[in-house]
Length: 192
Image 1: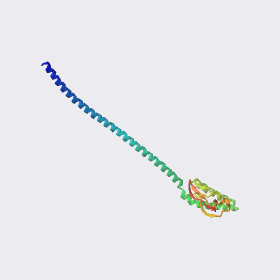
Image 2: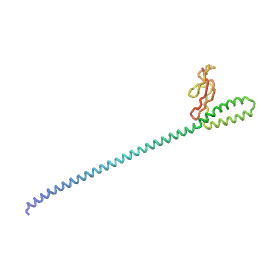
Image 3: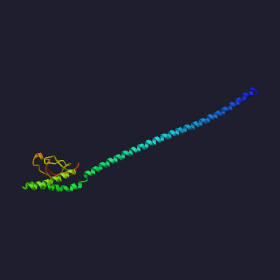
Image 4: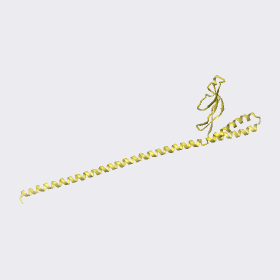
């Protein structure tokens, strides 16, 4: 073999090696691109899972808050129901209390103090029992300014004095409230 032939063979081999190296480089590049795509896909899957987790956490927190609001609202409604559960019974007892008040006025006029004292004890016991169940008297007196939100005007009469014009002249029937709710408005006469 001559030196030139060796050089030719070497050039041929170099050309072949370069072609093989290019093929290897292209294969490596293709493999690297696939790996990068897999990494990008993995990141996007990871990001997707993170977003899904955040979405589920948000749904859970909203559901929890909604449930807490529901519990608070039903608890409040239940408390209001307990406060006003006796309303019908108390309304039925109010005429009896009115009769007792009228009886006490008449009995106090009599001279029998033992009977007055006994009836007064029963009257006070009834009033205390009703108060313990939440019944309160609406405070309205003669001479107070008339307020339609807290009293019911039965009639108007000429005012006995200028000071009583537009004011309550007489209270015909007491008013009562249960908690904050008025269950019977006081019936009054106002001056004109």
